[in-house]
Amino acid sequence: MGRPALTVYGRAWCHLCDDLRAELAPIAAEFGVAINVIDIDSDPALEAVYNELVPVLMFEGAELSRYRLDAARVREALNTYAPERGSSHSKRG
Image 1 (cartoon, helix red, strand yellow):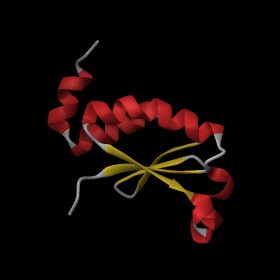
Image 2 (cartoon, rainbow, N blue to C red):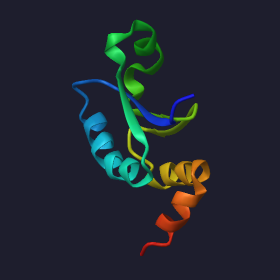
Image 3 (tube, one colour):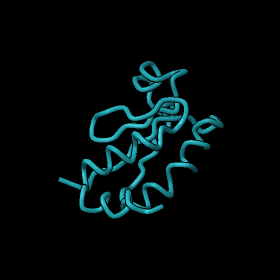
Image 4 (cartoon, rainbow, N blue to C red):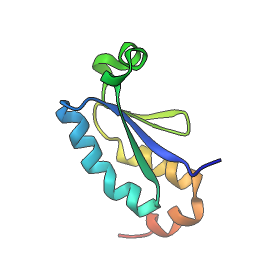
C-alpha cells in the first residue's frame, strides 16, 4: 500500500482549481503528503460525477473541500492521519 495523497479533481481551465492547488501546496508540503491532480475532462465517468462541482479535494476516500479550500478541515484530516506530525504543527503561532 502506498503513501496516502490528497486528490484534487478539477479541470485545466478552472481558476478555482488553480487557486485551491496553490493554497493546498504549502499544507501538503508541511505534512509531507503528495497531491494528485486529476483532470475530470480526461474521463467521461469523472466528468459525469463532478462536472460543475470542481474543484473537489479528497483524502482517504473523504471529501474535504468543494469549490474553495477548507484549510482547517484539511489540517484536521492530516492531523488525524499523522498525529505525531500535526501536533507539532498545530502548536505553531
